[in-house]
Image (tube, rainbow, N blue to C red; front, side):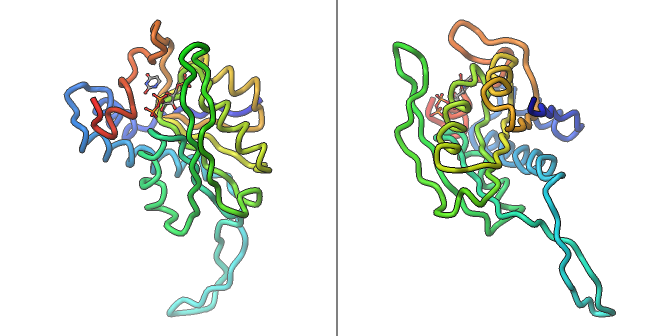
Length: 208
Ligand code: PRP
Ligand code: URA
C-alpha cells in the first residue's frame, strides 16, 4: 500500500490555522498555499535518488550529491496551480504539465477536458498537486491520465486530505504516495472537507 504522510511540523500547523480561517483573504491565502506546498515538497523529495558530482570548492576538490531524477510538476486545474510556484521556488528548472478536470453534474465524477504534459514525462518523477483530496475522484482520474501517458513515478501532494479520498487512492493506485499538510475526518453532504478550509480554488483565485 502507498504511504500517507501527514505533516506534524509546527510551521505547517501554524500556516494551516491561517488557511482554515475564513478571515484570511485571497492574497494571504494564495501566499500560504505556496509556502505549505514548498514545505510539503521538501518532505516528499526526501527519498529521491542521489548521484555523485565532482565539485571544486574555493579550497579543494570534493564529491557532492545531487538529485538523480528529472522532475515534473503537474497541477490539477485549477486549484493545483496554487501550489506550483511554491515548488518551483525550490526547483526552478522543473517542467510543468497541466491536467484539467470538470465534474459531471449527474454522476459527480470528474471528466478530463485538458492534458498537456512535458514531452518526456514518462522519464520524470511527477509531483501531482491539488490542495484538496476529498472523495478522491479528481486525483484518481488525474493519476489514471498520467499513467495512460506512460508516467511511472507519481507523488501526490495536497494541502488537506480526507479518509475517503485517501482510501480510494490507496486502493486504485497503491504505488502513489500521498503527502498532506493535514488530515480531516469528514466530508459534508456537498463533498466539502469538514472542518476543511472551504473551496480552495475560489479562495486562491478570489472567485467568490
Ligand atoms: C476541487 C479541488 C479538487 C477537487 C477535490 O476542485 O481542487 O480538484 O475539488 O474533490 P474530490 O476529491 O472530491 O474530487 P473543483 O472541482 O472545485 O474545481 P476548481 O479547482 O476549479 O475549484
Ligand atoms: N474541493 C474544495 O475546494 N474544498 C473541499 O473541501 C472539497 C473539495
